[in-house]
Length: 165
Ligand code: ADP
Image 1 (tube, rainbow, N blue to C red):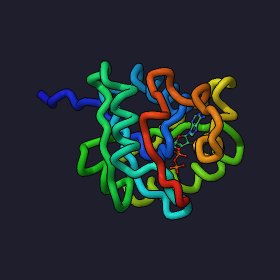
Image 2: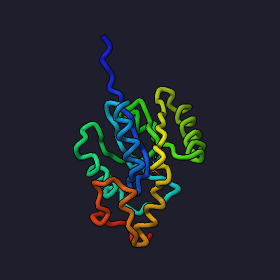
Image 3: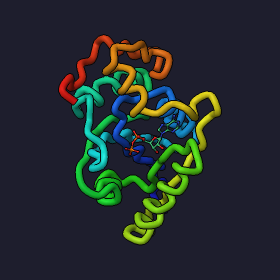
Image 4: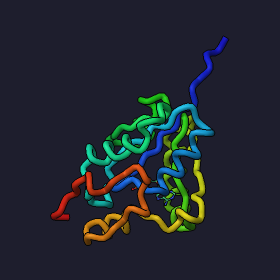
């Protein structure tokens, strides 16, 4: 008899910081997958404000009561990381047509490199479609209150970012 394979999805991203939009995607993905690995990766196009460790700490706080969510980080190709973790799915969130175009190219390249891994997209709820880590980061750096854009369990004052950015 074939062993029953756990459905594992990797949710890769910068998460700088983790927002309500990201949280919404992960919560909904838990009805599709047995396990979701949220993995903080470096985005070559974006300079980070929070360190990888701080970002992981924030995400672990949000999902501290959800054993099916695992928080990790990675470097290198997402598909190689998925193989290492025995994950058959890459999870991404979609807000706009611009997100779609960006994600389409990445997903098609990933498919060409690793045909056994499927990319799965979850469309954000309208209330989250304007939430964007870059804008949230700008509000924090300018001393504003960004609490309405991040999960309720996060107190942004507990985390320090890179003031020189
Ligand atoms: P990356 O640098 O890899 O794009 P992000 O942290 O910006 O990392 O985003 C990670 C994933 O979460 C992407 O799939 C992105 O489209 C999605 N995402 C970002 N913000 C939201 C949101 N408000 N609602 C739904 N998905 C989102």
